[in-house]
Amino acid sequence: MSDHRGKKSSEKRKLKKTDLHLIKQSEEQKMLADTLHSWAQSTIEPHAQHWDEEQELPAKVLREAEELGLYSISVQERLGGSEMGYTAGISAVELLARYEPSLALKIAILNGPVASLWPDELPLDEATWTTGSIQVNGSGATGLLSDVAWGESAKWLLLPQSDRLYVIDLQSDRVIKTTQRDRLGLRCADWVDLQLDGAPTLAYPLRRKERLAAQAWMNLGWSAIALGAGAAGINEGLKYASERKQFGQPISEFQAIQWMIADSVTELDAARLLTYEAARALESEGPLAVRDGVRLAAQARLLAAEAGHQACDRGLQMHGGYGFTREYPVEKFWRDVQRTYPAEGHDLLNRLILNGLNQD
Image 1 (cartoon, one colour):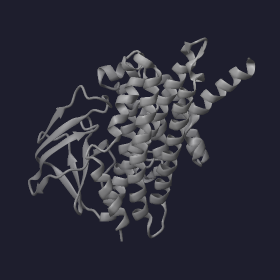
Image 2 (cartoon, one colour):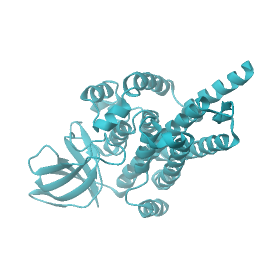
Image 3 (cartoon, one colour):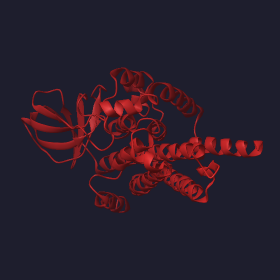
Image 4 (tube, helix red, strand yellow):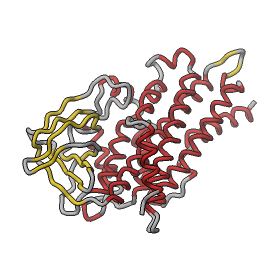
């Protein structure tokens, strides 16, 4: 009897930790992960569902995240960052997504495209990033940008377009912000639509490789969010299945449940390995770094989004009818993970894969 309990306890711990044991980390990265785990468990986990209902993260939590250095893991030291590298940033995003994917998205933006594109001569400040098409002339930027995450409170918006990086002043009265409410998932991510009417804008030259690399880092950010949310979803399922009994035993002992767990752990691990392989390719100094990194990052997002969705879906199924209520956290992770699929559809990722293959 004691052997059985020990086996089940070990299984739960192993699933909970499934992530970075596959990825080689420096001592600095391990310390960051331990700190982040401890902070998220005490500060975020008990309140995440309430914040989701309120559709807002407390300012205190955002300040603490910044004080912990989460906003600048990948940022250069001269700009006040830790300069631990983009892979470290991706690791933090994945870990944080197990607790609050909306905050993980903010960390992914700041340590991905913002960190990689931030102009040297511009003092680092609160920023967000998006893609789209606008008109820019001597009077500023004009156009509509939809579905911008963390755009309500940001001071700057980074927008790559053709051979230019536009840095738009979001605090200007030339910017009209329409807040999005009652979204399916990632409800705390401060989503807005932006109407620009001659908004003050700075323009910087942007090479194609830089633009593609920034997009690749954002894809890896989405991949990490999918991995974290997926791990949380299947772990919630296992937790419930270990407590719920039928025919005198936990339903986690049933073969159908065990198959769900095995499939999800395998799929998440496969997506995780591809995600970090893409990150290593992008950070390498080789002549094909961007080409290989862009392709692998696009593929990783496809694989991770599907693995994360399936894991959350299986976790929800393990709850039976309770999975469709807000009594258990699994339904929130199921909703949040849906956005990790590209909003523009698979065609965007297919184009990025082809761009990567054709990169000079």
